[in-house]
Structure formats: structure tokens, C-alpha cells
Length: 332
Image (cartoon, rainbow, N blue to C red; front, side, top):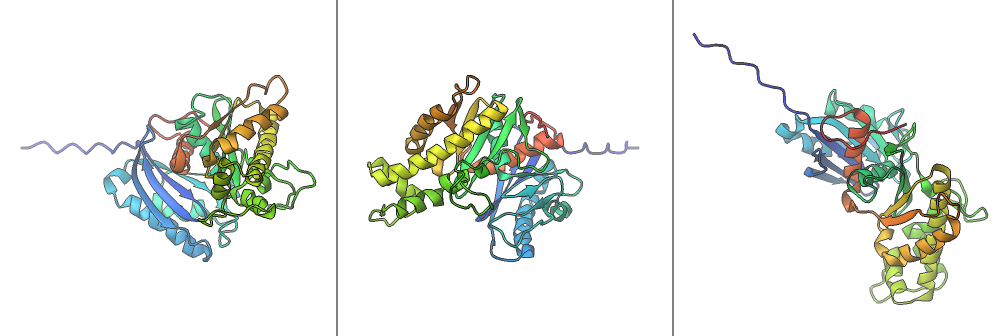
């Protein structure tokens, strides 16, 4: 008589699923405890379509990840970093650049795909902060502002060595600090916001309005302005100087309020390198003058184009109590 076979041991749940949702793409990944991306999936964002069509793209990404059944069984949680505003407490998203989603119940809508696993939603700026604190330039730092300067300007905070998303998942959204009281109206409804002065489209807009013209390649983006600035074009340099001044004012204000020790700057505009960072550091020395913020560092981000995915995974680990070697916990 043979003994009955012992039941199979349950699969280890040491991976995290991550979604990075933006206006141009919806990216997904399965992420290992050490930050390695084991599997990727991606779809274009049908940003001008209705909400159901956008959701279908999200589900397609999740379905592609779940098709690897062996790894999917190891997933402990799903982290979502989304363009905002988001409301983590309600599980809803209202991305400015996805009109079909307004107070869209994203967490509820993805639950059928992930079953009983926890779902953690944060804004994309908070995701950047989670990524940089876990794997990037803010690793080991007790207090950090991590920023993405691109089509918009977003950010997230690490305070007391812990991710600080705030009650709705939007804490640290530096792009909509007003730094010019009589400045241009911002699409957010404010005036003179950091984003209105320092985002890529606004750097290019200001340079063009002041008389700058692109080179033979016809590139009228902020990257084209940066190339002209490296060649010494005074109008291009002035546009980056103005962006750097706005960023410095916002960073200094944040540091004065919460005593961060480092500001990490990533995103497409940060790709300008010293065209941005040199005037940013100069301007910061004129704003961060109090003794407790005078030594504030400004450094480039390190997590690159995977920041959104790594950040969504890191936030899920920190906020869900996921298994494995997780990043430091979060405070709300």
C-alpha cells in the first residue's frame, strides 16, 4: 500500500506586479524583490478614447503578465503608478491627459484580474520617489524630494526614511506650487506654477516666443532648445535659466517645510544635463539660505525609463506589507 502523496507546497509569493499608466503608454511588469524586472508588457494609451477603451488596454497588459502562469502565482500584490490626480483612498484616477477617466474606479476595475491580492495606487510622482528611494539616487536617504520634469512636473516625498504618499497618494506634487504670483495661468487653475515655467513644452514655448528658432532638424521641443543652449544660444540658455529658477524656488520651499536633504531630478528635461543642473544649483543657493537647508543636494535620477514600474512595485511592497526584501515602509 502506497502512502498518499503529500500536498504540494504553496508557491512563494515573492514577486510584485506593477503598472505604469501615462498619457502615451501603459506599461506592466513582474518585479523581483531586488528590483529586477522579469517580464514586461506594454500597450499604447488610447488617451482620446472613452474610459472603457482605456481600461481594455490596462486589462490587456495584465492579461499578458498573467499568461506566465508560473510567475503570476508568485505575485503578492499589484502596484499602480498613474498620471494624476489620483485618489488612493477612493481607488480612483483622473489623469489630466486621459479625458475618458474622471474619478474612474481603477482599483475596483482591476480587482477581477488580480483576485485577492492587495492593489496599491499612487500618483506617478510618488512612484518616482519610491523608485529612487529603493533603487536610485535617494537610496539610504532619510529625507528626499524626487521629481520628474517632462511634459509636466511631478514629485514625491521620502520623510523619515519612509515613502510619504499622503492620504490620496499625491503628496509632493511640486509642479503645482506657485512660484510666480503674477505668472501665467496654469491648466490646473492656479497661476505661476512650477510646471508652467519648467516643463518641457513650456521651456520650448518660452524660447520660441523670445525669438529662438530650431536648427536644420526642425526640433522645436525642449531637447532642441537644450542643444541650442549647449552651443551658446542666449535665448535657449535664458529659457533653461528661467526653468531652473522655478525649480529651485519650488525645491527650496519644499525643503524649508519638511527638511529634505536631497532633491532628485529625473524625466526628459533632466536629460539636458548641466544645461539644467548648473543654473539649478546656482539658483538654489539663492533660495535655500536658512541653515537647515543650505546643504541641500540636487542630483540626477538614476532609475531612468523604468522608474514608473519600479516605483509602482516599491510602493506596493511598502504599502501592502508584501513579502520578500521590500523597500522601507511608507507613512501616510
